Image (cartoon, rainbow, N blue to C red; front, side, top):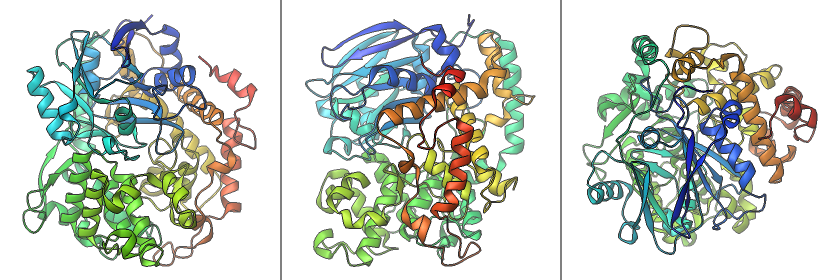
Length: 605
């Protein structure tokens, strides 16, 4: 059926027996789920049981590329990982940029399924479609950057792509990510799943080609997309995603001091202009990207001198304002340590902000923290705490268990944990954007602005929707979620997707040129199908309506200051949006997909 873009097979790797085999991917799976996130959910649903322990050999890691991954189009770098999350205890889907996805397809595979557990630390090297199991005992304690360099030297290819778990994963940190070069599968603790399998890294050779149906048409689409990107994404090139920091703060709905307020007094020294003038070294691009939204920053003086990293909006918000930290040098240092240790900046920022609030309330004492003064704004204490988390030392070893572990240990502090389904918030205050509140609540992986739906474009930028309105938000969030589901399954970065063509659905046009098949009319239906399948997984794992609500702070405490002063999203208000959302999804009042809806959408594999 398809005449290009797909490789047609996956690689199944059993770490226990150190064996691997190729498997054909049914064409029907491609038709129903496209690739990437859709295929990950499909195989997860079929192969994992509801009671699988995230850290057991029975858990699996599903890694899938997409039809547009690696093709000559802007930023077709995305690929997806699915597994049972040790942070949240439920289904996890997470995406990353980097070169592993494109190179995996060059080696002839649309995906990898990793199962079992090795008897000693190993890394995998994939070259010309073959897999080598290599000893990684000497790599376990190395930083992610050191690991990547060491592996490239060992295999004799400095251009090979590497995805790896950092040292934090090997000391049991439940918010450990998987670094893919300097990008990451950030949320949900997938790095700890790798470590639990004694899998340090996967390296992929860069040789090979990906077949396409109409190369000339793809080149034509690419030229126009690059032109449009240069015209419409100048702000991203100049400032990156941090360009939104001041805007959100001015509206009174920024992520500040563990979401106790939406206004940050120290915003000036973390603003886009200040960062550009005092820290920016250059802009950097992902695979084949004309936008280059990554802003490489360096600390030029002080205790963190020499630290270099490219902080994103979420990292600045959650390691900055959420912790009351206005010292951008400390934010850079914290971000650098997170990347080196392999720690999710978003979850750890929330966890530290929670600890700071508990410390200021007298719940945590100097005895608990080992003498660290965890007051809001103490950047040096934040950096030291991240080091402790990464090393599994002191109070950091306690916080490394994530909100779910902390709630068991300190149940009286649960009120101060800003999360849904145990995944911490992104850097948007939902009392200032009601659509974001519904997106957090109904996301397939917990409080998330990506999978849940980034409503900021509609509630702020285009102002298509009143941000404080309730009606219509169910439709808005569903539409964004379904769109994101198929975009994640096509393999496109959301920053550049709207530039990829000439018509109303440029992604569909690119898909036709790549595969020779026009599925444009089906894309939204496919996105809806993927989201329904993910909900079916969550329901099987025990998720119901009660799990789709926001924290008590959001529902009971009005914002105390700023343009959104007095705003609160009560349970009664939230139910208006949630009821509309469930009705449009064809889920019952408990959030369970109805048999009629599932049949109509042809959800099951």
